[in-house]
Length: 425
Ligand SMILES: Cc1ncc(COP(=O)(O)O)c(C=O)c1O
Image (cartoon, rainbow, N blue to C red; front, side):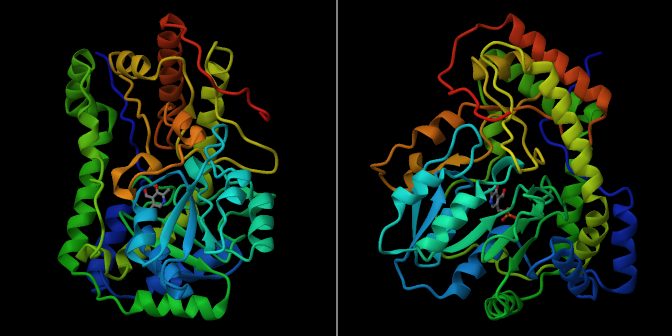
């Protein structure tokens, strides 16, 4: 029988249940010493700045914005291709998000678009290291310095990646990371701010510490949901659960997967679950996960290289670009193909669940109003597919995925796409 592969695969510690049980036995599910230990270990690993744990990655960003205490209406520049929640929180903080286009080759903020978007009201820029690849930090930091902007790195996808050998998240004034289930370090939710200036860091820490502690039952509930997600994305279980729905939908040209996404809506007032502290049991999982991070990164990179080798010579296919001096951690493996929807439909019939856009072209969202700027780079980037290569797959599984995707592409329509040729490989 055909075994299907889910688009999602979390990084899971082999001793997850044991760590949870130990925290429970010590009465340290919610509060406990591991929170501070995790913050210290995280800052030490990154090598610069103070780390402050938060309920979500997005809340780390929100506290950084609040701590900067910018004049109301100040403009914050973000890439047009990002997770909609981040610009929405700019608005919740009383500031104005301004979108600049991305480079469709790297999916990251284009320095020349950043330069064009700056006005006298601009106070900060958010370079998002999307899909696991660091931004062009030399250019962005140089613009930021010359124009007097705060630089806040969005590292939600990119913990473990480096730029000129140094970890991302340590270049700007501050950075934030996500520990959601599918992120490079999974603690079933949570996030971290990394702040360079000690006074700013103290303000961020005070904002995070002012939130109430979460309820132990809710934390256990979240961990249980994480366990179920783990079970349902295992190939054997996925084949018999979500896969038949996706398989049927492929013949009906339906998209049931859109119901998995967080609904796009105003976030003011902030949803109640946003404002709480990070729990000790999650910090204990984070501490153990940090030790395995490099191993997981290497596995994912090896899978990406295998996929590159299988797909790179196909006409109309463009494999991920990695400019010099950057390491790519492949949080998502994104490729341009001649006909995205055709590939998705025919791959699921071969048991491969392929995701399309994982983030949003924010200028096209009614939430942010009519936009006079129509970013061609972000629109083009929205046509990519994301092929599963996550660390939890075996080399054999990735080889099977690569072969099946290749066979679909070989027999697919060879409609050319307007992607400029990669300048770096
Ligand atoms: C680019 C980006 N930034 C920030 C975040 C926010 O992380 P969190 O969900 O932990 O708030 C995400 C979440 O998926 C993301 O994709």
